[in-house]
Image (cartoon, rainbow, N blue to C red):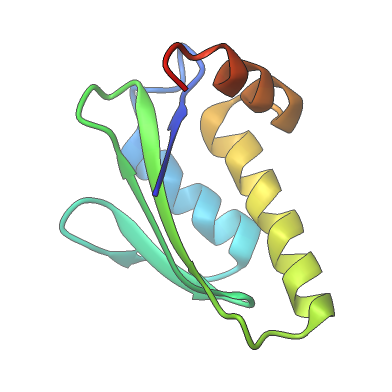
Length: 105
């Protein structure tokens, strides 16, 4: 389970944006869960997305399919990174920089 901060201004409609971005990047209609949304795609057996309690970050929990072929893994990772870019508003480089500057980690 990983928590990602959301860029300011993108937090208000996080719940509806999460569903839209899942559909946009993975091409599947997400299943509504008690906290957020869930999909399965390619090398991901389960991807759960829901807003954090503070509403300023998103919590993403994944379960990988270890038997997936290499080309499926590469495609899935590419889609997942683009989904993270869209949902957080930060690029991969910005997310790494923010994670490194987080105190206590």
